[in-house]
Length: 98
Image 1: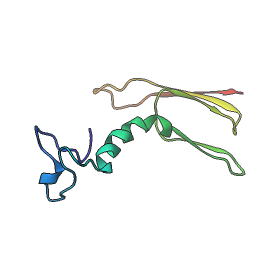
Image 2: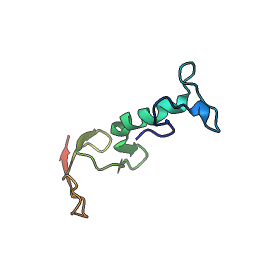
Image 3: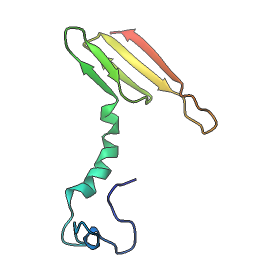
Image 4: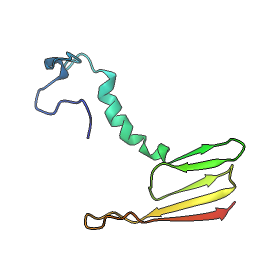
């Protein structure tokens, strides 16, 4: 899904009440932001706080690995595929010393 991008043959935001963009001569930043957001999902899986007590935050449950150098741990998480009849998400965490 791309937000704020008109869907239809020959349509433009120039014809809306915003008057943003034209079909051929201008292309505003918010057109690209919606597309860019999905490409950035992979860089927002883990965050860390390097304070006195290092903390790892897992923001998304996506099958992935992370070498957490501050915590001296290799973290692997495996997510079972979600199916419509199963209301539970199964995530397996495995921590190994580095």
